[in-house]
Length: 174
Image 1 (tube, one colour):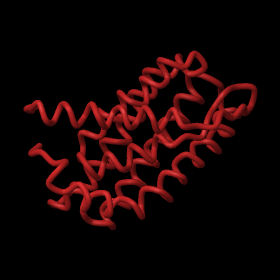
Image 2 (tube, rainbow, N blue to C red; image 1 turned 30 degrees about the horizontal axis):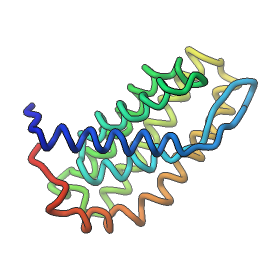
Image 3 (cartoon, one colour; image 1 turned 90 degrees about the horizontal axis):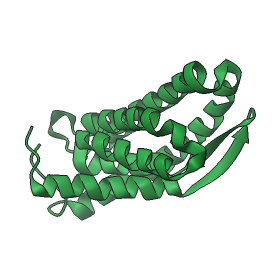
Image 4 (cartoon, rainbow, N blue to C red; image 1 turned 120 degrees about the horizontal axis):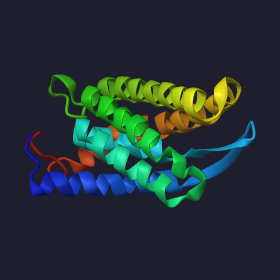
């Protein structure tokens, strides 16, 4: 797998956008622990439409970097790297399937939903098995569903418009 300078720069810029999206959040205390609703998943979905499966790298790095810089979520660095990385990869892989390259609304929506499911299940599993137990993990699903829902509501109508506006500007050969 070749990483050209342009590809590395795009992945880095998209990681920064994922970081900023996660930074824009509302903290929520549930079951005696902290959670949040944020725009990071929205940024991941938009990134998936723009750069395809490499959105996994951007999403994992950008969202985990937020966790690294916020003491409340520092324990989540590795789980976030994995879960948001897989979320971005799946969304981008599906959006770019069959040469659609993020330009087909149906493929984008399927990718966003699949990525959202990965995020929901991934965070639920880490919550349950590593951090807070089943009862609080179930409560945290509320913020995960909120974050994914916001991502879908914003990214679905914007995905094609953003893709059209950036065609020729943001693209590289994978």
